[in-house]
Image (cartoon, rainbow, N blue to C red; front, side, top):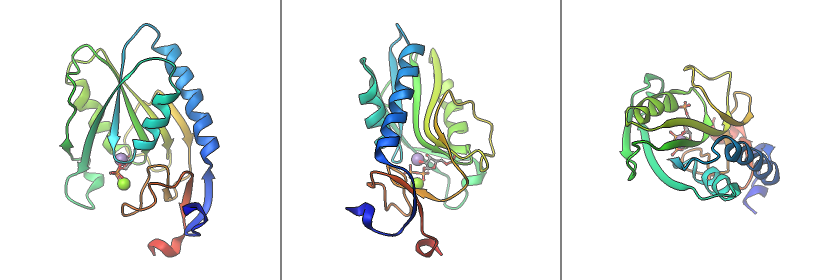
Length: 181
Ligand code: PRP
Ligand code: MN
Ligand code: MG
């Protein structure tokens, strides 16, 4: 088990807790979008696990598409300048778009993304994120579905990485300081 790898300082959420919260979010989404077709837009790569479990928790048909974005340059995340590495295949005209994210940290990625997607003529654009760090947020982003608010700590697992590692952990935990210090 990679979970037994003790580079995790503390488990914040077990697989069971994550999946059960996503089921609750899915129930809210089903209720809110009754009679409307949903296009789920996952943000690569972190949102892969959330997308897989959230989409399968929805007791209805949905479409899924993906975008890959990156902060412009490295270490300039706070600039809020984002570039598209992989765009959607889907025309958003008239679509109900639900962006699926693993985490909102500063909020810069989503704040840019929501403006970008709204400019493409969709019927609606909303956000579903598993995690949010209220203390780290620099940009006000209106989020319709939030799994858990968490403290401002470095978290990995369930899609979330540190240097591309730990994405395949089933749980979400904080990384031991010795790993990154
Ligand atoms: C992470 C995370 C969110 C974003 C949140 O992605 O998955 O997409 O950062 O940060 P923000 O709110 O400060 O903008 P990252 O850019 O690390 O890419 P990844 O999903 O491929 O890991
Ligand atoms: Mn991401
Ligand atoms: Mg990352």
